View 1: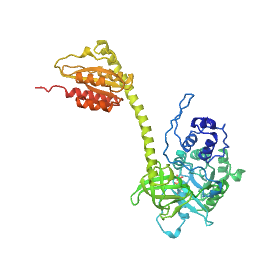
View 2: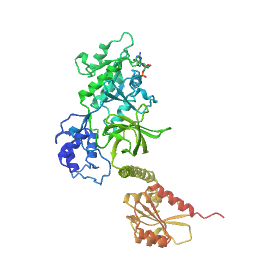
View 3: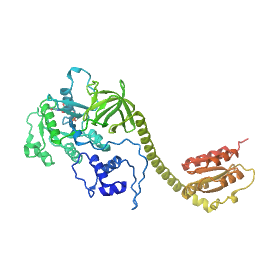
View 4: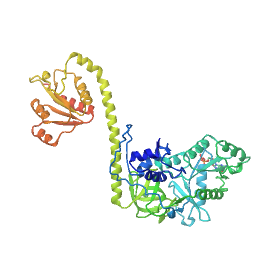
Length: 518
Ligand code: GDP
């Protein structure tokens, strides 16, 4: 939880800048942010940081540091000027209890609605479709019923849904997932419109349902609240027009607007490899107007738009805000839920993709490092018992940073001499611990000639040369001049960053020195 002022301090930005970013990050709420407002939602904080063009690490010390780097990512444009805004259709998600008729309702709406009846194309499931009223008004429906669609659209800060249609079967009433859907819509601050379905069934009692809904905070108009409830039959396709009209009314109340100009912003609803068309992804446009030739980035994907298709499979020339279109022309496919941003050129797209790739690599490296540390810790534990036994036998008496003269016997016995350098005491110790457990048998001896912390030094090379040792460098560098010198002197320098791989290599070297039996 941070106040707006805290965020500004961390970002080293002035409060006004952060307030602007907030307005933009938190599109759905009507909170009046001031510098003292506490923000509880980590997603919003992340969005603000993203919009401000920074990546930062919160460290738990008072002099909070910013990990600043040149950010080549694509970021949304600042909020549009009010005069640029135009009304846009609502984007609707259908939710409710299982078997209450969500799928039937979506199918019925899709059938009745096909925007362009004459076209005669094949209706495709592209993840969303539009319904047009005779008045010309449109409503966009997300085509996957239930929680999955809603949650996917909510993730990554994409607030794609404007209204939830809560389907309640008249013969069954308010059930577990009805309540769950109400909770989810509440949390996302998305208004609800109730569709009381299966009205064709005999003996339904609407009042009972309205009372139950009111108990869960959804107070419909008939019982004195402001939530619209429309009785329908999805199966018999009854009263669907009224439902769509109610949705457009709801949209007017919400004053839904977007700027149809400027760079396109949107969200990926579906992405797949289509057997006929190849890489295809459905984009729900949220701002700007998507056209052929636009260059867009989304997650790890990007496209130069080659073709736009409607849900009826009809090519369209442009997709203004709230329009879902199947986009062709992807070089790399994005994932559902990815934010879509238009960029100025293909060159810019590849720069953004490269930056994002590097960011992912960095994150992966951090995970890898954690995994290595965990493995090292496990190794240490595993060998601790053996180690104390061997220590008691006094085989290796380790004196830091000194040649291990004691162990070196100049004879013809097959020997592997090693020199170990590591990045920290802990890693060197862990490696030595493991080497100590090597069970010396009569065939090959393991001599540790030198060890220490830090990069490989000229002194190390000298020692390695004197003892014909293999140099093992764990998580440390070897200056290139030394690498060249070592090569000339035929000294092997082996770099590892995983202890067990280093140990495996030692084992291989030992095996290679086992004399062949006659
Ligand atoms: P979902 O699980 O919410 O997607 O529900 P479905 O759309 O799969 O519907 C469940 C069952 O209810 C199916 O057998 C539908 O035919 C039936 N059903 C859906 N809508 C109606 C309706 O308006 N009237 C009647 N009588 N049955 C319906």
